[in-house]
Image (tube, rainbow, N blue to C red; front, side, top):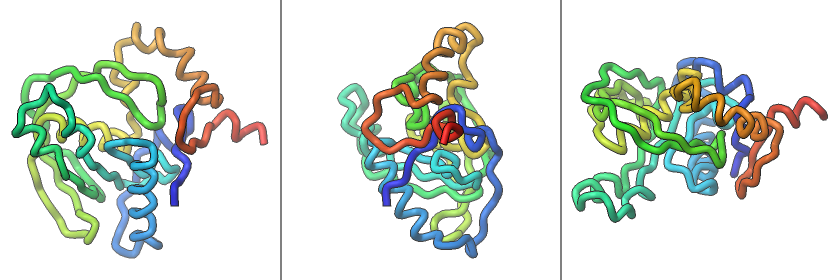
Length: 196
């Protein structure tokens, strides 16, 4: 089932997610719904807070990035088919010189800005079978993971922008929270919800 994506301004996007266990109700259904929702919105990642759940769960599928002709053949191959579920994830280490990449977010449609992140990240997480992993990720895959990880920490990519950039996009962010944005996927807008 395709779920509505929570828009900028909803308090759930600022909450730090709580760990979950194998006993989480209807977990398989939740995962299936999250993937359906992400693909429907043409996303490469989706975190549980974006569907209104303050839990430490996010999914990633970087396959759409593999079509980028500016990437090396090795990078395209690595991105193609990289699909993961991250449960109760923790960043162990971030390394390397920060680099800028133009990021967007399904919860903040029509806003894209350069965000600086380190290129290598070491993660501890559980997969969809609740099996533990410690893994190192690099480049675009690391960036997508860092972006989604921020969601379960209550951080949005706009929080990482300079105060000047934040002031420049403030009106657009306010419009998003009011539902004054044109999107072709289901969304839930916090300032519309209050009126009902």
